[in-house]
Length: 372
Image (cartoon, rainbow, N blue to C red; front, side, top):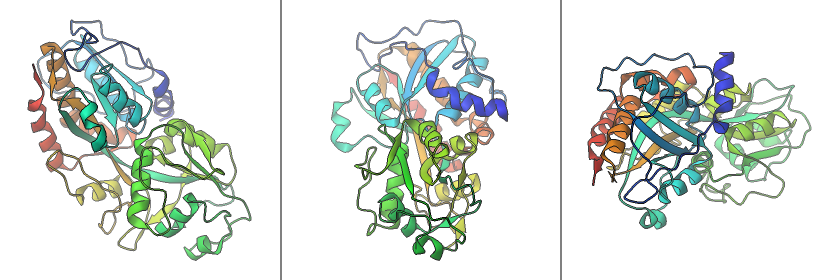
């Protein structure tokens, strides 16, 4: 467990910057066989070993984006490379917005993102986009109150805290949620400094659950109140929370656990107070409506035990690439992630697999990636 936690925290720093293309651009990287190298150089997490029998592929894929999915990606990449010694997959965790920009500019072959591309920006990409959901997980409301080991919050209270309308932990509204013994201590809200799918999904939840008190919108970037503190990536937010008594922020489940944070239980739309768990995230995902593009939104799902701040995450690709070898490698990588080995590996790094029906739809969509 200790080695797994160290691995997760190291991910954003471990990227080999090879230039890759997503279309017929001169930026396209070679798909010829390369010597496989671990994607991070770290210790392999305790997960299911790759067992899928398939034709071996070789070449190099480059991706960037979401820090939310990075811990899962790292394990998936290591296991995929073990099964395909001639393949190398590089992934730089630097935020969903940056990943989308990299894919738009054809400097990577795929983007990791917890949010869809804004409609106004789709035309700037160099071809049709495909969304491949991969795993699902909670976003925690993590806090630093050394004297408080248990906390439960309603959607209204969460919205007011992050909007800067509740500024002290002894506020009567927090006590009314079923909490006692809270200190007379100022609240410091911590949020992402980068363009973040985690931010978009967290604020999407606030928009749905309490649009009256949350008026700052839902986006990868938010105009936060001036009294707040920013951290880069999920690990940056986690670090800022740990370093400030009275701090509270939103952090993905995997990084919150790896950082040793504590988090609040949240009252869901069914009126039940639920913990951030993989089972709760799975119930939220199962209750979401899936679009024809395989995008979905599990936030504030209506399930009785659904964890309301649950986030989806995607690998975004183009439908066409100029290099047939690149296509074969990308399709093999996605087939691993969406196959039984990749999905079974999710829980080992604190993610839940996709609902079976969505997983099967995503697997079928892989055939839409072609060379041309």
